[in-house]
Image (tube, rainbow, N blue to C red):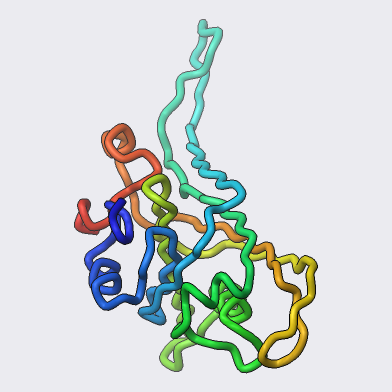
Length: 198
């Protein structure tokens, strides 16, 4: 298995080479130029896409004629159960939160991705882009649409107090790169952005 999966972008390959991403399960925050290792596999992954078709029914037909309008976006839902000590062990130098540990900071960054970041000129909202790689099965680059979390026992003593040892994190990512039908049979859900030069 490759360090970060066969579908990594050039940017992610550079990050891997500099030890920013040590394994093939990761979340990469492009606006931070920083990736975090996810040392567990998701409990489940839901990968879905929709299509829109315009329909018209001419006279003397029992079924409408469909014309293609658009597809997508492809959306992937991830559900992880993270143990604080394990995540810290795999990410000793990752950004820490003022109020917590690496897992708290990961939650903060995911939640920050669903809030606006206004630029002074014109008050334009720039969506933060993330990439998620899970083994050689799933790769998606896009915007985060939703984030949820749940804290579970046991309680452990941590650097700055007592915390739940287990944290369930779920979030969904909607893809930002367009694809044609010919790409799907070749790569499936492990879509390589760097191959397409997009």
